[in-house]
Length: 586
Ligand code: ARG
Image (tube, rainbow, N blue to C red):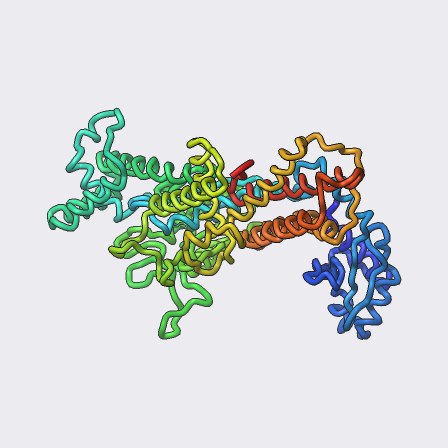
């Protein structure tokens, strides 16, 4: 099955060719889904776009296009409107046939890409010598979602966590491990070092209280960088402790598995990278540091800004490691697209390393490197989310809070409705609703903006929230329970009949999933998928209020049941791409 928008595009291209005798294949005739139903379902702006080039009035051009346009199998007769828009309205029979076709399609009409690429999504990539805090939420949630979408489109996705597992922050932890758990370095068994947070806090307390300890921490960094074996072992143990602690949270968030390939992985490659930059004539010595000068970046005095790749003491930095990663991803991983969901504060960093990567010839025209920036999570006061004592909120506390709030809501509802539910049921619903709400609140905002973290808002039953969406799904399942109907066994040979306005509106929306997914795959903006699902729930609710389903006569009854099933499956699929699981009941 071919997507409606695609089919119409091809037909418009053909009409353009026939009308003006030029080969318009490949030219985008600018076809958009009309946001206002008065203008039809799709609107073509080709006539306006071509007015200058053809030296004719847009309405006249539109008329010539329409004269050659044969869309009678899909649309009612096209209408020319305003300055020269071509408005297209889908035929009911066409909609019915399309719905019939997706009824048996597990991909719901979203054809896999014909041009699959190797894609790396660089996430969640935390710096691990710290406790997990609110700042770790967005890379995990957004990275997971983008990976799922790109993968669903049919690309081969590798999730690689570029963990910050090297350098100065490890000094304190290594020194503390050596002091407090010397036996960890002599045994092959894994010792219980307590949880990361208390280990970290004890190390920090020691660090803040004792100048000798601070010196030991500095020494540890020097020894680590010099490759001292015992220090390396201590470093490894600390990394494992961190990774294990982080994994607990990723599991709670149900983040799909990723490979850890941290900064340390590139250590041995850094000298080569610098050497290659030098050979290509890109390297300049600047006050003892090795740099690459950048275009488009200047300091306050307006002088060109250098990107340091090797410091004057011989040490390498974050940028050097990322350059090594770019080179490795292109040359060894043979990747065609790399997506970095990382905070907006690193926008310059990525622009700079991509520029150097391009100058060095690693990033060529056939590979795409993209920073997908995101804003901050703010508290209700509009400031960076902090605890009362001014520290970043622990991610664990944030998630536990959401689950606890969700639990409160559910218990209250169960009581009000006089229902009896098991502890297991309540626990499961609270967990899914709590975590989904946090994820959905994050993904439904335009990724590039900051947003205010509010349990009340994200857990609200009305509005663009996870509970609203989950409820819409539960409602569809309620229909199947009430009517004792197995959606999977709904007659595939029974016809779809669309009569009411609300049915038509819902049907059209269901058939736009492919458009939304291909947009999100390009622009990497999950909020568009959220908006689509929100609209879907809304259109479904309107349909359900207006159109009796179980009480309708055949063939309308089965047809409406298919609409319910398709809505349910679209919600389930769409939410799964956001990393959200549905509930049958809640
Ligand atoms: N570890 C970095 C941070 O927490 C993010 C790394 C993003 N990935 C990358 N390849 N630079 O700020």
